Length: 161
Image (tube, rainbow, N blue to C red):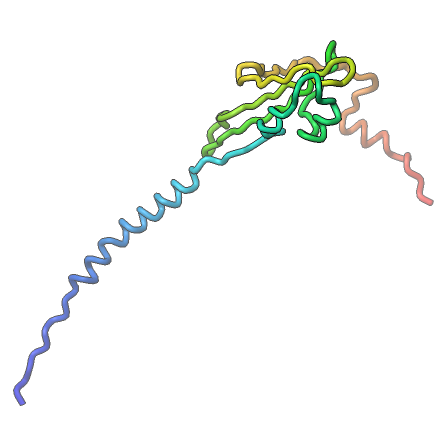
């Protein structure tokens, strides 16, 4: 029998696959990171259906009917005429960035002194104003005790029975 030589095993196919592994790992990592940066959408407030709001006819609908149709308002003002506000907003937050306002809806319903709807208005985003908190503090009566004073004042206060 003639002695046949075996052909050398080619390493070209596995070596080509080995060359793609780091690139595939980088691509997979980039996809995971990009997926983590998808914006998070938050809906806050009482987002009322505008079709229901359009069914409210001034002069005919009462306060109780509005409550049954739209639910509780976000805010009620009773200075002068009574106004109900249904406020909602949608924000998007991407990764660690500050939330960005995408939509704000403010529905104002004004009632007369008999509890009947006088006016219905859809206010735009410019109708709202940010509230600036005040830095002042209200003084309280009493002593301000430090930690050591609090501990020493409790000695003998509790009786064992």
